[in-house]
Length: 99
Ligand SMILES: [Ca+2]
Ligand SMILES: [Ca+2]
Image 1 (tube, rainbow, N blue to C red):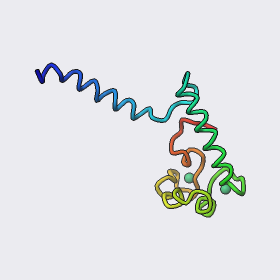
Image 2 (image 1 turned 180 degrees about the vertical axis):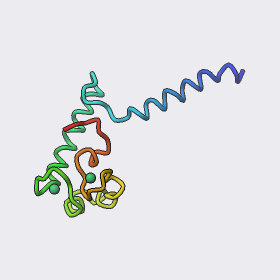
Image 3 (image 1 turned 30 degrees about the vertical axis):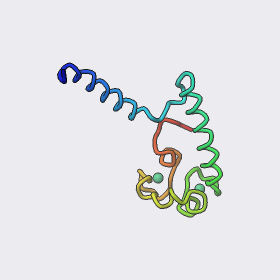
């Protein structure tokens, strides 16, 4: 009885894992997921550009503190290349939405 259910359970776990890895939809995805991705990217770009006051394409700590304090607190975590600024990929936290 239990043994019969194992393959289904294993499959369910695999699917869940795959979904977690693709939580961030790609921009070129068809249908609703693609629409959501494009809209979310658009909103993120507007916020990024509004926060980037000196228009150097990256967010300094002072810009983050003013516009996105929650990211200023996480700057050292999010700043993957360690230059003290958040670039676009570091700001959105993934590289699936190239600018
Ligand atoms: Ca800036
Ligand atoms: Ca950086």
